[in-house]
Structure formats: C-alpha cells, structure tokens
Length: 295
Image (cartoon, rainbow, N blue to C red; front, side, top):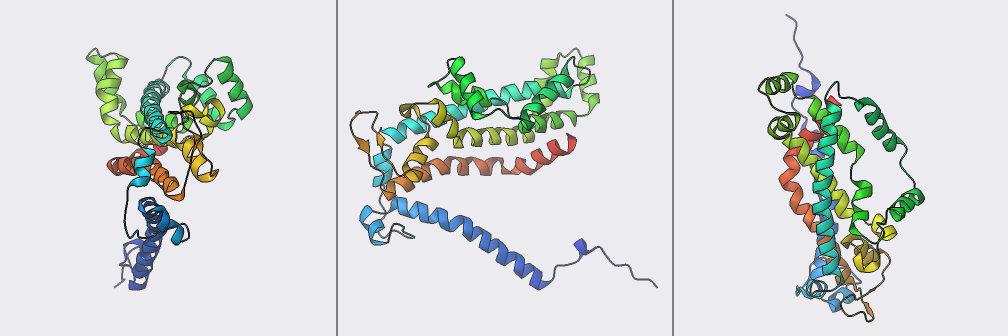
C-alpha cells in the first residue's frame, strides 16, 4: 500500500516552530508597544520627573495631565488640531467622491475616452510633478496660504483609483445589465448596486486618504503660513526642530516645547488613527486584495 503524504502546509507545526513564532510575535509587539508606552508615560509625567530620569519615563510615579491641559487650552496646538480634523474630513470626503466617480467611469466598458484618460492618470503615477512645478501651479491658481492647497493638489491618488477600478470591474456584468433592463441610470446603478457591494474597498481607500491627509506636513510647509499650519507641521516644529512657535492667540513670544509637551503633541497626533483603524481593519485585507487581483 502506498502512503499518501499531506502537503507541508497541512502538517501540524513543530513545537519549536510554534515557539519561534510566539517569540517573534512578542518581539514585534514589544518593539511597537514599548516606544508608544514610553511616549505616553513621558507625556503624563511631571517636568521634574522627566529631568530626573534623563528625558524619558517608562512609568510615571505621579501622573498629571498638565501637558495636555497646556496645549489644549486654546493655543497653537488646539488650532492646529482643528485644522487637521477639518482638512482630513473634507479632503477624505472629496477624494472619495472624485475617486469613486472616476474609477466607475474607467471601469465600465465602451466609455468614450476611458483608455486615454486611464493612460494619462497612470502617467502621472509614473512621472509625478516636482516640487517647484507644483508650487508654481498652486501659486498661479491663487491657493497659497489657503486650506484648499492641502486638498486639491492631492485630490485623487492613482493607487486608490486603481484599487477601486479593479473592485468595480469584479462586479458581475449581469448585475449591470439587469439594472439597465429595469430602467436604472448609471448614477442609480452606482448608488444602489455598486457602492453597497464595495464597502470593503471604500473603507480601505477612505482609510488611505484619511491617513495621508492626517499625516501630511510637507505641503503645509510649502503653501501655508505658520498660523494656519496643521497638527503634523506643528508636531514637526516641536519635536524634530525643537523650536517654539509664536502664540497666535496673543501674538507675543513663543510657546516653549519641553519634553512632556512634545510627547503630548505626539500622542494627540497618533491616537486618532489608532482609534479609527480597528473599526476598518476587517475590511483592510479583503479590499486591497480584491482590488489588486481584479486590476
């Protein structure tokens, strides 16, 4: 009798292999969680305790929210936080709207001019504009020092467009034909059939756009004055450059940036994405893989 052997991926893992996976997972989790815990603990520690511990605190003895109270009482960080929330919300909504319409048009067969437009969009992905041409275009359009300059130049991302286009192409053609036989227009088909079936892809693309807008600081440094900066640019000035900023509420002096304040700003800039991601994580893999395979 010939014995049949199962494929290697179906065999029960060796105990040493499982132990190695557990150790690797613990190491990765520690590499992610320990730095964040240190940042959070330092932001909750008193300035004296931070100085006594050489600049970092792993576990504060007397936690205090003084740093958060100082930066959220109506000064620079509060204004920058409002700017980031507004730009992220408006930018994500507009980007999703434009990307959905363009992806739907490029996904349907026999649409006049779809192939040249798709090639033009892919060309911008392969050959992105430089910093100086982008600045000159924004300047000529009169968008300097306006919040529109943080949204319009990056309104449609080519990768997100390709993902949505591939997802729309994966919807069976019979559903489109049945809707047309019932007299539905293209807009009605998009709203009633395509979008409800594309929740996974929309969640992934929306998360990509939201993270990009939330973390963006480079365009703000090019196009915006300091009193209109979003949170990430303020964070860069506080933490990376180690500088203070002129207080826009009083116009006098600069706001100091001790270690506790720097870490508090860093926590505020990081936590919103951490809170949103768990609700979208279940759509993440499904949306990306489906769009990538179909495209």
